[in-house]
Length: 184
Image (cartoon, rainbow, N blue to C red; front, top):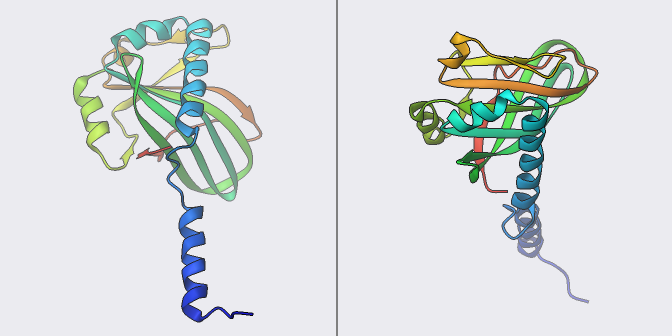
């Protein structure tokens, strides 16, 4: 019987670690994200007709079909989505957020960012890790299925829409959410 040396054990361990950290090339990750993005886009068009106009006017749209958030005093959220320009996927992104404070529970929701200017879209794409800031305005979906926008919203470089909330944490916010380009 042959015994493994320390180097052999380290090489096996390093190989296993690298295999576990796969970048996803050759998997169906991108296809799965695109399917979820298509479903989210179609849901928005049917449920909130006002979003079709925003989609047409936007320089680009970032769809985050499923964000999962959980917390027990310390919390976090994570999801993956795609940036589309002219309804064609150009990049994939993850959204992460950490929080601390009084919180307990879990929820899932979706959100979409409409980049209304070429400059806002270029800033987003050039950033190694873009965080939503004061330049974003929230559009509110009411119970009747209408999208509430006003003159301020229409002039904003980034419009955020949060919808589809389900879970036990009240409210969903994008404050502090960081978006990073990924290879699914």
